[in-house]
Image (cartoon, rainbow, N blue to C red):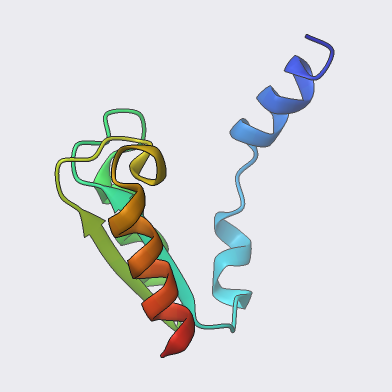
Length: 82
């Protein structure tokens, strides 16, 4: 509805130039079968974010937090507790 244009701007915003400024330990979670955003994008994020870790969730698409909720939560919890 009213926020459609805002959503479009957010999705289309290119933040690649800011990624190398991220200093915090960063978890990048990706669905193995993501057809919306290819896994190559996760690799790009990982290469530009210094202290990052990529985990691919098997048999999940663009929404691994919905499709593999238990696995997703365990990965996040383990990452936080590292």
